[in-house]
Image (cartoon, rainbow, N blue to C red; front, side, top):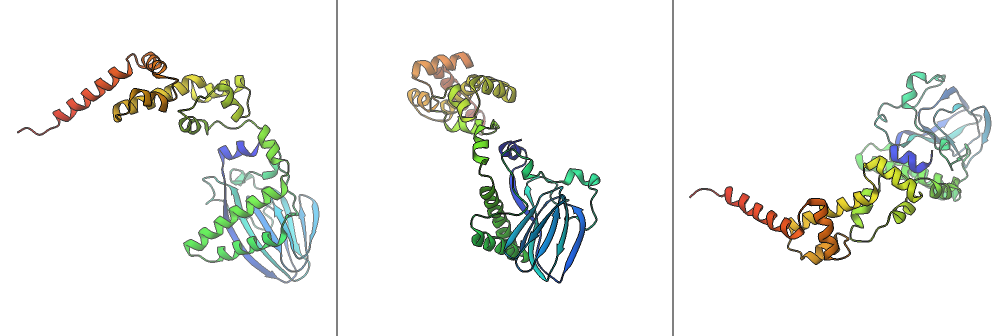
Length: 306
């Protein structure tokens, strides 16, 4: 699955669940699996983390990202300061039920429905356990500020922390997914955007080929997928949008017929009249006249008796 397809189901809306500046003497945490993401910065000291069977030695100034479902054992081999945060990357309605797992909690069968999607399971993404920020100092400062803000319980600081979490996740994606843009360009895009796109460009000439190109699909594949999702071929759906807008303008404005034809994407008044009558069974002029007469009659019927 591509990132765009995943986001159509669960958008990226980072959410900090827990964060702190852990100051500890040599320490260890037994094996566990995660429901969410764990991001750790080794500010001071040395750590040895085992993630999915692989050992990773971390020194001061390095970042570790452990993704959901990964089996991990964490150890501080010296006195350490390790700011960390547990967070979700993708939004879902279960985020309030999710929690940081404890030492020894390896079997997550009962909590399978709470496990966040893994970024590395998406096509074009391969984020390493040992992060490689392109700008380590700004990234460190961003992360530290995020953890600091989260310590404050007032709403504005919490909002600031969540906003910084979005910047942190965006930076990680940009720094570690060189092939993501190319992969996303070649991926079939969800069609959720199409209704807004058509409404915004209603006055313009739009061909199926242009719509298909924007969706990274062939015209035939786009038409089939469009009909599957919306129940109509693209050109017919677009015509219904244009006629609906024309009806609104005819009944709710004083625009001339030529203006309405242009606003609704018709080539000229003749094209407008022919298409309108085909879809509604009446001409634009008759529709406006009947609509005005109906509105006047309704107004008269609601006037108080003398």
